[in-house]
Image 1 (cartoon, rainbow, N blue to C red):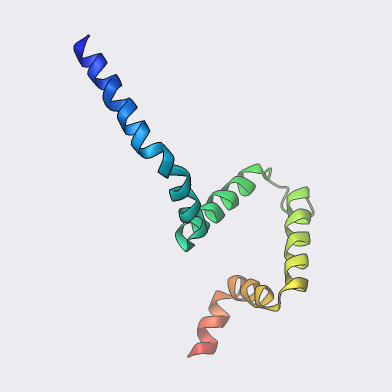
Image 2 (image 1 turned 90 degrees about the horizontal axis):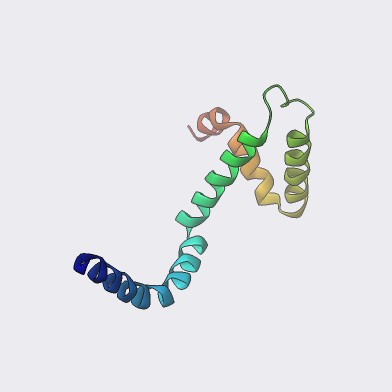
Length: 97
């Protein structure tokens, strides 16, 4: 009983100290390169798990992905180069040699 009350008090104190700062910490983290990479990895994993097996060719997922890539490539030439580099890692390595 005493231990439960003590645990409860400690928990409340930690919440009072940490809670006002958590939102700011999360915003800073998700604006950082590490946070953006984490969101990117999770989003990619989610989208790939959403795609049904055998639906890669011409399916909803592929159409959506290609549409997003085309729009981003049209808006930003650097994005187009990043896609080319991602799709051709061996070509990039051989051209740097």
